[in-house]
Amino acid sequence: MGRFNNFKSKIADDLEIPNNAFSGNFELIMHGNKKVIIENHLGITIYENNEVGVKTVENTILIMGSKFKIEEINDYKVIVKGNIDEIIFGKKE
Image (cartoon, rainbow, N blue to C red; front, side, top):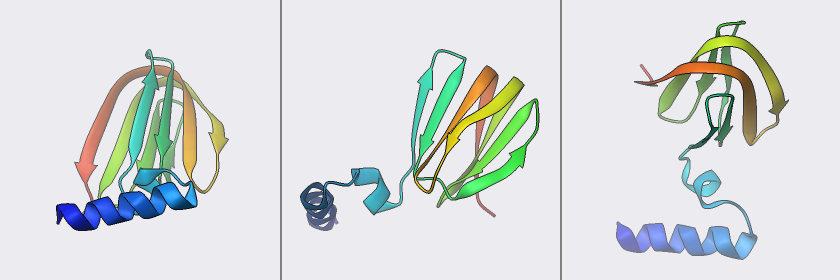
């Protein structure tokens, strides 16, 4: 299995695309408790003032807090700003 992952990593490097986009894994980056960036998402499932839900290949991510705004969204990443109190990871059913 490790050999296959190395092959996929090399292809991603050769194509100059992020490794996690090729593998189906998501990447979550937090900037304090004010901003979260989720790369390699499959869409927004909930968008309210106090919660945002993001779908990924294997998980759902629920961001809880207040004053949420989506700063940027595209096919690859979503950036959510606001007062983040909690992030909950759940398995897709």
